[in-house]
Length: 184
Image 1 (cartoon, rainbow, N blue to C red):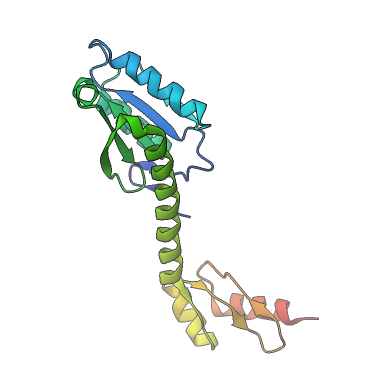
Image 2: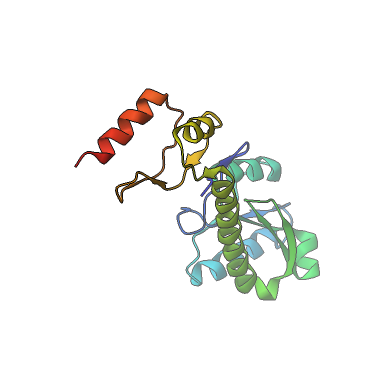
């Protein structure tokens, strides 16, 4: 899987130390911090690794901080959200923002965590497919390695197959690799 971009880490939910961060917006206003704590407790009760950031930093600073850390989901709650009976959830891997009813909190968060996992997997799979080549000749291997590709299976002719040559190599290095792999 691809675990980073220009904004920092992108972690799958299964390995992320924090799966959800809760950012209270305008937390100095009445009821916001209490609602954020309630959300934290509800998610923690479902086994979700959650953190409430009630520090004095601005919401924008917090968004950036947790994007760099790779937290898969961000839940935002503010006075208007509370009035509307909703919350905002933002996925790290594609920055998609969704408004959802607060009554469906646990279901929406679990669904979004699964969407993050599946989205990251599909992106990594597409990247691997785009960069993997099956080659039949040494010239094809050298050409594709110069393009920074990843080799798929290469039949060495004696039932052995070489896999995953991932670095640019000279023809001599590749010849030596094949010689080592074909020695019995």
